[in-house]
Amino acid sequence: MTVRELQNEILRLKKERGVFILAHSYERHEILEIADVTGDSYRLATAVKGAKEDTVLMCGVRFMAETVKILAPEKRVILSEKDAGCPMADELTPELLGDLQKKYPNAVTAAYINTTARVKAMSDVCVTSSSAVKVLSRLPEKEILFVPDCNLGSYCAKSLPEKTFHFFDGGCPVHKQTGLSDVLRAKEEHPNALILVHPECLKEVTDKADYIGSTSGIMDFAKKSSCKEFIIGTENTIVEHLQYECPDKKFYPLSKKLICEDMRLTTLKSVYDCLLGGGEEIILDEPLRLAAKKCIDKMIELGG
Image (tube, rainbow, N blue to C red; front, side, top):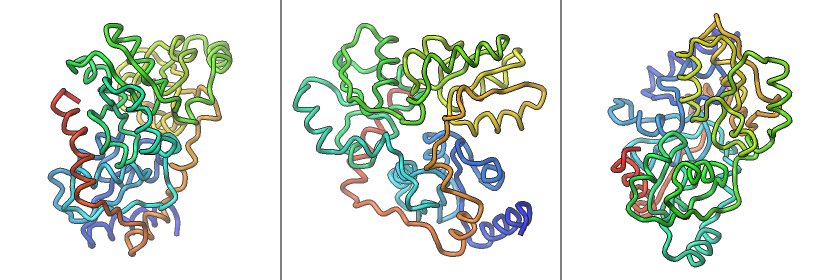
């Protein structure tokens, strides 16, 4: 089958079998085209509310599918590729978090949404890259243990000098690959371009950025800006998506290394196979789900 023929077959099957498809923005464009909702991990998790379909197919990574199941336990949630994980989420185990909480007993634990359900269950509040500063600023507590991404945590600490932060030395291995040399090279090649980066990037990168924000924030900024050229400092699929959405503008990757191999595991064939009964169903014990949901509820309460 051609790409178009496979997409048409997927659209037919998902309607016939009552499947609601979610696709993270880092997935390939041909996958975004057959999804019901696209966006960042938080948008995908909350988009399921109100969906009439009983089955949700997550084209993304494991923690995203877990978050959907936490918020929509009545749905059957399928992960498109069982091996699609998040190295940043996986590097912080409950045991490591427990050790940190003993080290900083007076600190509130703030978990980035890029964490496992077991880590969320041990945390006080959840945050996203777009909501972190806002949510943490509204916490009455002054001492915060931020996990797992120390780069996003440092960005929050810079914005909230009135609070004391402690960090786990973790982060996204994809975003951490870029450095100041990449910024200087890209700016030399494209001197008129604005630099838009994700806060998961190293401080030496964010310090040189014209805009720092979530995946959705980067895309919205580029679409609304009167500028015509942009250097994009996040997963390189965003460059492709913006080229489709803004054909009158030019987009350049900050680095060719900004590729998430876990996101690339999902293909149109993966989606097709899931609709025929493949993929992995996400199962969470109810006590774990309820414990993990508390930190997400707290985020929503504080304006996440």
